Image 1: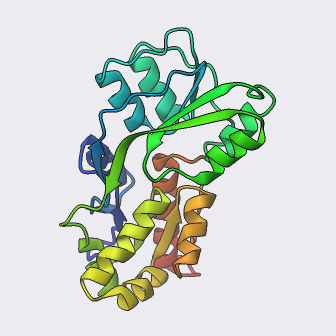
Image 2: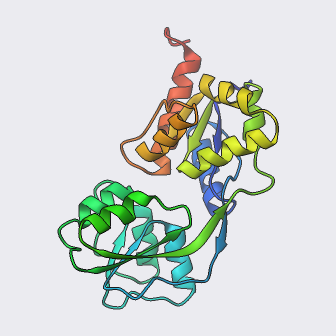
Length: 253
């Protein structure tokens, strides 16, 4: 932990207002944020396919579609979670469905029984889970996927991997499976993968949801915390709490 007893927590949001807000939130929790953007958004210019039901799986997808002039009109609009729904409403759209569980599996569960025989447009990144497409198809839908943007690893990413390798991180807040994969790819590029995994294991590993936790496990990282609500604020809060408790030790200091 840093000299001022503030846990150092790595955050991997895209290099825009999201990582700034994430860093500010970590500071509000008493942590020292280590912003290390692991995602760069490359828009394709595409818009959702013409279908009566349109599913968005991210705030970014909504914003790009709106910027491209797309409007849902009378379509049934589905958002994977509150942040995506809020972005849609900010664009002036009405949101019809938000699942109780903010995952691809949650979307399938929410839509099962209402998509049989329907054409469903899934608008998302190029790294979307197959769970959504396969689940909707199994529910009887005719599914069209539109890639609105590609997610890439910024060339400069990787400071967090070096700090983890040096034992200087107290927590890592992974917000998607891709952030886990890019963190490890950056560690590999810098020649510190084994050390970074060891350092992350000694720190608190946070995963925003079960799919991210599963990816971490497949990569040799066990998620110490997975919040009930799949949002960054819940994730960051749990990571900071766990890192602070770990530093205090079993006797509280």
